Image (tube, rainbow, N blue to C red; front, side, top):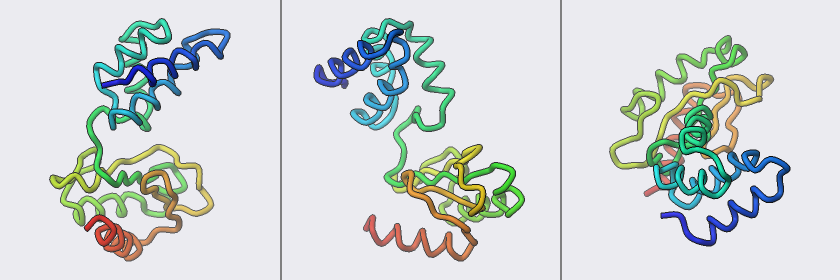
Length: 158
């Protein structure tokens, strides 16, 4: 549930812009921060706070990969699939992580520890292949590095 404080922050954001709808992306971040992902109630609250239709807010929330439509895992792993990463074998990295975690891209492990995603570009072409764990970069990733990373993350989670 979106708190009154967050609703006020959304309205305050909208007031900063010449066109209130410009606040939709920061408002989506606020809703996701509070609820963990973008809920229907969050969409409605944002629409009301900044004067947009729920459908317009939802079209933005579903377009961008940084907004989650379902509760993600504690660790969100995003593997870059841009041309630089593709040329450095990101497909094998994704397949390796799918096998290691027992999920497909876009899924979350049964224990809620990991969500595996792909992203068109993570803007680190010179260090391909690259992935992010909760928005922190891991660059020049090999399959062995991916396994070590999962082992370390498992240690932090348990």
